[in-house]
Image (cartoon, rainbow, N blue to C red; front, side, top):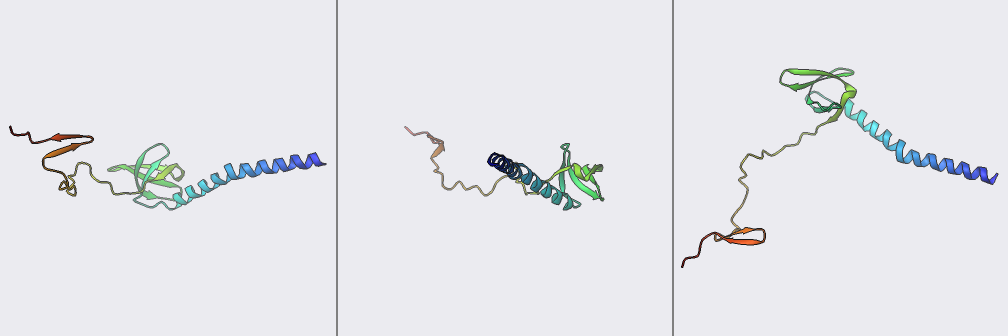
Length: 124
């Protein structure tokens, strides 16, 4: 009887490990995805499982209409939405940055990493 209890305990521990490492995280991820899909609203930027990016134009019970370009609307099943993009304000890289302050640099020298380059030639 002692050997049977040991193997039973081993099986129970194996099931517990599988539960905590595989099943539980997968259930949490599925719950998070379901919440994301139910929270979709018109105007959200989405990415489909096929990699198509666009803005939600209309939502029905199980279908979502995504505007991928001006006037081009594509119909998807709700489950085809992979992610909802978070809108973050991106800085235009071509816009001049007026906040840079060069007052701390010396007028005579230009510092380039480790080397000091004399900008004004010495007068002889």
